Image (tube, rainbow, N blue to C red):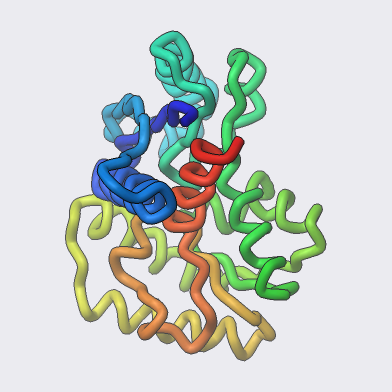
Length: 230
């Protein structure tokens, strides 16, 4: 079994989900008392969020690259960054590592194509929704991406940072997200990506009029598959 290097803490609530998903998959596949070989490096999210707010991606890349190198030194065979937004800096991080980073957007794209989804709605932080680093990897696989209108982007982003990252799951916010998903369906979306690792705390399949693709679950399962079979 390969050793999974989890780079978490962004936020720690979603990192718990990664640990659970990976171990559950390994147990299901291998049975008995099997569990995943995992090394976890959890950063201080306040430092990363400050960099995001200031647009200082270079500093955040320096912090995460140092953490990833420590995972590599500790014996990780590959790296899993437990967040969507910080995949923006994966190219710079990968240049400093000998082991591969399992990219979340590639895992999501594979899941979408397995379900024949060619036009998908994307929910996430404002950085993930409006910048190209995530959407481009989907475009390259032939998947068109629909994002919410500007005011809805702000609503989604506010809930992520002011509620979900603090462990708050509110019914009123779920209703807001449901209305946004309904609009995106009207715009022709065939499915919706929960493209922030915390959104799965709020939205489940039963809450959505579109098929839900939870990036946390997809990424975690892809990590477990890689650990077992590659």
